[in-house]
Length: 159
Image (cartoon, rainbow, N blue to C red):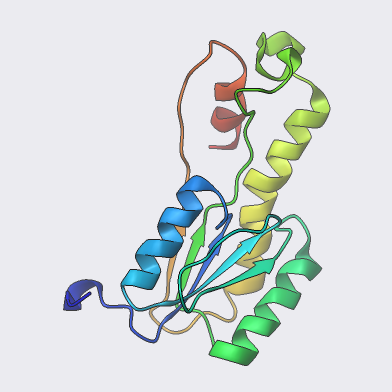
C-alpha cells in the first residue's frame, strides 16, 4: 500500500487471537501495510504471505514469553500490539451457555475472564517492557447483544 500515513513497512506487529475472524482481518490489514505480522493464538490457521503464526496461550505468561523471545530474536522488538484474543459462547453452545443469566456456568465464566481479561493483562505485562519507542497498543473488544441469553453478560463484566 502506498499511503504514507499508514505505512508500517518494517514494523513488527503482534495480533493475539489472530486465527479468529476479526484476528484474520487485523493480520491481513497489517500485512497489507507492510508490517511483519505474527499471530499469537491457540488455534492454527492461514496467515498472510510473510507473516507467521505461533501457538500461544495468552493465559499463560511463560507461553507469551517464549513466543516473544522468538519474535524478538527473529524480527526485533514489536511496534504494534493488537490484543484481540477473546472467548464467547458460540451459537451452537449448550443451552446452559446461552440460556438465562442465573444459570450461566461458573467454569464458562472463568474461562472467558481468563482469556478476555487476564490474557490482555498478561500479554501487556510481558510486552510493554519490550515495545519499541512510539509503539502502539490496541485492545479490541467486539460486543453484540443477541440471543437473549448470557452472551452479553461476560462481555459487560470484562469491559
